[in-house]
Length: 170
Image (cartoon, rainbow, N blue to C red; front, side):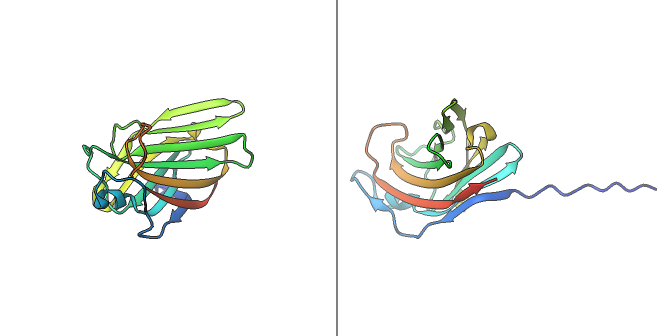
């Protein structure tokens, strides 16, 4: 009798992560309750390789706002490579159909990817999955900025929180 064995699925590999101090949200403008302004207080951020050609960007915050809120929780990852000729960015809000994107900019041209936001309100997490073509080549500094405000508008934000993540290496 022959017994077939199945290799376990490989675990996702964290390629960059960072934590942020609690309570360090900067309040910038009036017009939104204090509770909503501090909802973006970053706890943790990770970038995980989930397959050979896909990466998951996840933020854990104080509280995920409702999908139908009249304001947005916005998250912007910026990544810069070894030289200034390569940058990449990922932007999204708590709204699943809110225009989430990833893009890369190099001397050879730009690449744009539309993304879908995954919400896990019970765990205070939001995430997007980014294809390889919208990622920096292999090494990059990573910064994250979180805002409350109106996504894709010129209106000033109500509040901001920032975090640095470890360098991406894959």
